[in-house]
Each structure stands twice: as structure tokens, then as C-alpha cells.
Length: 584
Image 1 (tube, rainbow, N blue to C red):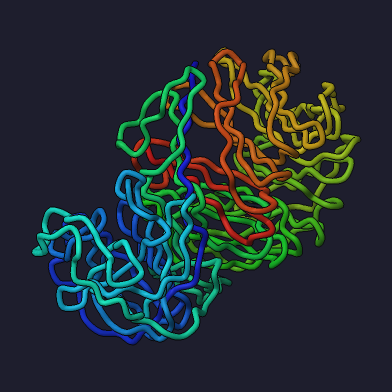
Image 2 (image 1 turned 180 degrees about the vertical axis):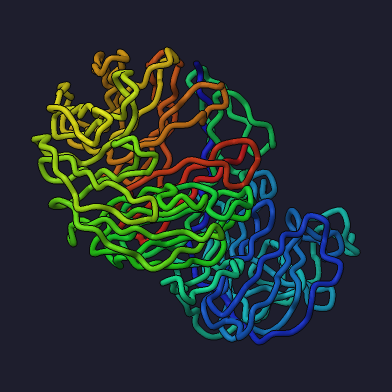
């Protein structure tokens, strides 16, 4: 299959504005997006990603609903102009970034482009911070939320624009411009975060602490993408049509999480039909949760304590109340933390249960067939089992020797005996631990791997109804597919190349052809390799997309509900989550 690739380079996160409250939304444009900005700061972004206004912490003293949309009543500008409401001065300067389409600036001097604001029907140039001609962006500072924003050409009196089609200014050249700077003072705030909507969850009686309320930190209009296909075709991205074999992502979006996130979950925690994200944070010893809005934005971050150095996270209903709970493997404290959920996206205080040494992965299943979920962990040389009591409690762990160095695990009935088994990514082997249905496991059965395992995924890659194992080998820069035979054996061992040091992977129909593809996280160069599946167990490298520094985990879901899957990647060094939002 020929893959069309379209990747959009978005803005790097920058600090934003602040201000005192005032004004309200009055007849916002039909295309407007409204975002609640509070004292923690946030990001205001137009629907098409052209205009991004980043507001730093302490820029506003109270929460305010901010709207942004295209306007037809602004002075003539290059491309569309945008109306922002309400309008008020900020306590800190905002960073305003404009991403323009190449076609809009054809024949113009890109080094002379500036962002301007509408003052009494005249464009006044904002103090420009810089321009990235390769990235098609211009950045400026604003000390208030201004009424209209537009893009103009010129740093002095000769600034010009193009009629947007709905403005009162009929001239496209020599338009009225005030060239004086309208902002002053330094930019402040955390450049790695951007602002949220309020999630309304309470921290009382739940062990929850609130943190910055961030949304996606940057965006892209999708109009200046680079596209290619192995058939010589060009990907038509940003046309709203999901096409088979097309990979179109807004690249560079991120949202702040806790310190040193090691793993990510994508799921609907509060039952509102929108996907949420959760990370285990290895350096801050907690879990971050952000509730999704279905638009690609996420609400305020909430933090829930865990053990020391969380290394993995799993979700299930361990107390049988119908709400999703979290289980966190803690590598340094040798424990599993159980956080019981309330069904609204919040969790109670963690209860820790001892495990074996250095747990690296955690999962659930009913291994003694008492209709109550139990917990298994992968840790040094063994598989650990903690039987559940149905109320969220766990028994003392029992270890089953596995040899090697297990780093990941998966639970299923691999030998079709109606009892749950466990497979381990275990050094240079895939290890099957066959369950007997009574809470015991047989001797390890090993299948040789190419290289040393770093992550494991169990899924039916060839459509035969049997589970297969897909394993990343960090040192060998490979993904290996081991085809399951339905009786506990795995064969094939077919390798597929990845980027440097792959450490995590997830599966989903990323190409829109109805077949499973793989998203592989490469820690060596901070990227995701997309391997397109053919439905028969084979994969072809289709795209590589940049993410953050030292990525650790990956999840797939449709965050903006446009019918195309998006990708979330946790980044250890950046303390954030990269969001690869589809832009078909």
C-alpha cells in the first residue's frame, strides 16, 4: 500500500500574557472556540491553528472565558483576521504566534511579516519577538487581549496586507498602519505549559492535588505541510477528508504533565464520551490526569500520589463498583499503588501493596477464577501475583520464577485452555507463564527474540483470530512480530526496522484502511515511527514524526473526534505529553 505522509510543524511552546478581568463574550463568530483561562494560564488557539495566544501563570487574577474566531470586519490583512473576546489588559505579557500558509505570503518578504492588532480601524504592529521563515511562523508580545489580530507585511510605514473579503478597508496596499510598539516588559511564566478548561473536580477526601491547568501548547494551521508518498503522490492534508494511507498530524503540540512521565493511558475516565489521558510520573512520585473535551484540548491537570518512582500504570475496576481504578507499579519502593476511582475522573488516596524487586509492569486478570480481579507484576527474575479481595485490597505477593529480566507483560488465554496466562518481555526471550486457573503458573516457556526486549504488545496482527506478540528491541532498533499458534506457542520472529532505541508501542488503524498499524516510540531521537500493517502480519515504515525528549510511552485515540486516530506520547525529559493530532 502506498502511504501518503503529511506532517505539520507546530509552534514551540512559549510564555503568554496576563491581565485583569473585564468584558464578556458578545456575539462571538460562528467559528469561534472558547477556552476558560485561569490564574494558572493557558492557551487560546483559533480553530484552524493560525493564531495562538499563550497566557502565562498569574496573567489573570480570576478565570475568564476567552473566545477566538475568524472575523470579516477587521482591516485588510494577509489571510484571515481573528476576533478575540473579551478584551482587557493582562498582568503579564502574552506571546502571540501566527502560522501562515505559504500561498498567503507568495511574493512577499517573509522577514518583514508582523502581527498587528486593530486599534480604531488601524493596524498597530505588536512588538515582534522573531520570525521562523522555515516554520512559517511569526511571534510577538501583547500586553492585553486585543480585539482583532492580523498579519501584515512591513516593520515600518510600508506595511501592507490583503483584503480578507469582509473588511471595511478596500485597499490591499498602503493600508493604515501604526508602526509603534504596543507592548513592553518581559515575558514571564512557564514556557512549557499552556492553559486549560476547568475540570471541576475536588481535591478534598481524594488525595488529589491540583497543578497547572494546561491545554495543548501550540498548533498548526496545516496549510504549510510537507507531504510525500512512495508512489510519488502528494498527501492532501487539512481538507477534512480521512483518506486511506494518509498520515497528517499537527506536530509540536504538548501538554504539561508531572515530572518524568514514564507511561501513558488513554481512556474515558468520567463517562462523558471523551478520551482522557493519564501518566505515571517517575520523578514526582504521582499520577497526572487530564480530562478530554473531544476537541483535542484537555482540562486542568490533577495529581494523585503514588509510590516511589512509578514505572508503569494500568486501569481496571478492582473494587467492582463499576468505576475505573488505577494501578501503578513503583520501581523504587517495590510496590503497587491502588487508586480507587469515583467515576468522575478523580481518585482516592493510594494504598500501596509490596511486590518483588523493581516492578516494571502491572496488569490485571482473574487468575484464581473467583470472579474477583487479581494483579500481576513483572519484576526482577520473576512474575508476581497479588490476589484481589474484590474491594480494592490485595494479598501478599507470590513470586513465580521466570528468569531473565522481565520489563513488560500482557495477560490473555494464549493456549486456549480457558485459563488466563501471562507473557513477559524478558531479556532476549518472550516468556509464557501458563495459568492453571487456581492462582498458579507453570514453568516458563521461552521463545527467542532478536535483541533485548524493551516493550510488549499483544494483538492479532494477521486476522486469524489468535493473539500474536509484538516486541520492541531497544538495542537492535527493531520491532519483532511473533505469530501465536493458539496453543501457547509463538513463531515467525519477523523483524521490522524502527528508529533508534524503540521503547514503547501501540496499535490502531492509523492509515484508515481498516487494518492495524503500529506507533513505535523511539527514545534515541525523540520520534514515533508509524508502521503500516497489511493485515497479514507484515508492516512497512510509513512515517516518522518528531515528539519530545526521551519519550517513554504511547497511547492512541481520537482526541478531537474527527474520525482519525491521534497519538499521545509521554516525554521523560520534557515533563509533558506530545499530542500528534490528526489533521486529515
